Length: 336
Image 1 (cartoon, one colour):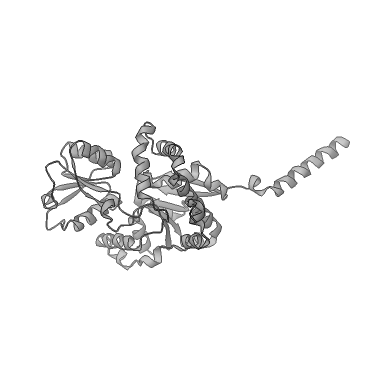
Image 2: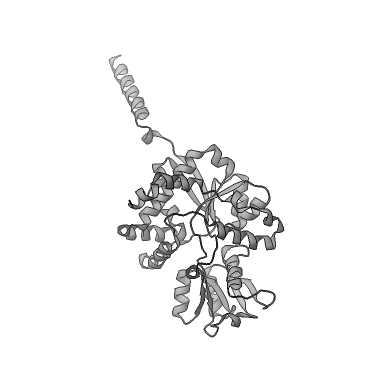
C-alpha cells in the first residue's frame, strides 16, 4: 500500500510539474508552408526553423518544396497549407477567383535577376529579334523579363523578342553556352559565374531598384483571423531569424544553414548565396505596394480578371506595424 501511495504521489508531482512548466509540455502547433523555389532569400525561414526560433513561439514550421507556383496556389486554396512563400503572380490569380488572402511579409521586395546576354550583345537595342530564357511562364523570372524589357524601352511584339522557358538557373546557363538563347534571366550566383566566362550583365534589376514584389509570406484571411497568436508568433520568430542572419558573428552558422537547405556541395559554395541573402533581405520586410501593383499589371495581361484585384486588399502590413510600434525591430537588431 505504501508503495502504491508513493507511486501515486510521484505521478501527481509529475503532472503538477508539467502544468507549472507549460513551455516544456506544450504541443507545438503545426504550420505548413510551401516554397516554390529554394533561394537565398528564404534564409529567414530556414534559420527560423533550424535554429528553433519558431519553436520558441510554440510553432512547428514545416517547409515543403513544391516546384510549381500554380500548384502551390492550388494546395493553398484547398487548405493543405497554412501559408505560402512564393512569388505573388499565382496568388494574384488566386485572389482574382475571390479567395481572401493576405501577403504580410516580403522576403524579397525587388527582382533578384540580371539580364545576362551573349558576349557580343551589349546594348538594349541589340536584343531586338532575340530569344530570352526564363523559368516558368508566370513565375518571377518571366515577369521580371517583361519588366526589364519595359525598363529598357523594348516591346515583345514590336521588337519581335521571344521568351523561352528554359528551366532554373543552371538550365539557363547551359542554354546561353549552347547559344539556344541570346540572353537569360539569372540570379546573383549564376550571373557571377557567367560574367566570369565573358557573358555581359546588361541590366541588374536589383541594383537598378526597379519596383517589383518578389517572394513573400501569404496566409488566408480567415486563418489569420482565427489564429492571431500563430501569425504574431510566426512574424516575431521570422524577424528574430533576420536579426540572427544580419549579425556578423553568425556568418558561418548561416552559411551552414544555407548549404544544407540549398543542397550546396560545401561551405565555400555558400559564400555567394550568403552575400545574396544579405543584399536582398530588408531589415524591415514590409511588402512593396508599388512592386505589387507592377505584378498585378503584368498578371492582368494574361488574366483580365486580375485587373480587378486591389493591392490594398491583398497586402497586410499590420502584423509588422504592430512589431514596429513596440520597438521590436530595434530590440532584435540592437538599435536604440
